[in-house]
Image 1 (cartoon, rainbow, N blue to C red):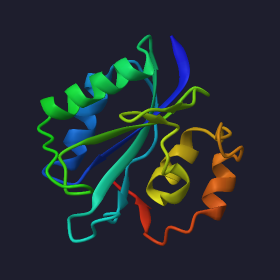
Image 2 (image 1 turned 90 degrees about the vertical axis):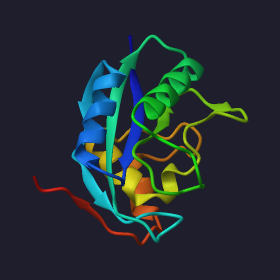
Image 3 (image 1 turned 45 degrees about the vertical axis):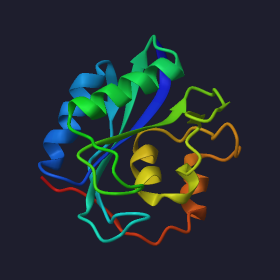
Amino acid sequence: MERGIYLLLGSNLGDRLHHLKEATDRLGDVVASSSVYVTAAWGKTDQPEFYNQVVEVDTKLTPEKLLDRIQEIEIELGRKRIEKWGPRVIDIDILFFKDIIIKKDKLVIPHPEIQNRRFTLIPLHELTNRTHPVLKKTISQLLEECKDPLPVTRLQH
């Protein structure tokens, strides 16, 4: 099993907390979870707020097989890809897979938008201050430099 694999989970339809828990349960081997954060929609803003959470997983899967499993989980939980950045029951993104760098049509690791999204950096920073293998900056540095103005608030429950 390998550590250092971080995923971002997001939901803005239905019972958002339930969807995050269901996704986490189906991922298996989750070794750490951030708090849940309420965040304004990014990209397409005329939709409900998201609940976002970062989890660290252990897996024997390759990055490509992990992506396949993630997409299966999204479909199992009712995800329908209708419009880019549209509302969704669940969204799961691979942020980091150890220090592996992949640039393929269907898979880019590290996730190419980490540094631009406060809703990713804040929960990620809760779990790690690792160095981004491409940008060569820590999560703290990326968070300091992030220009994303959208509010990110820890969910109180």
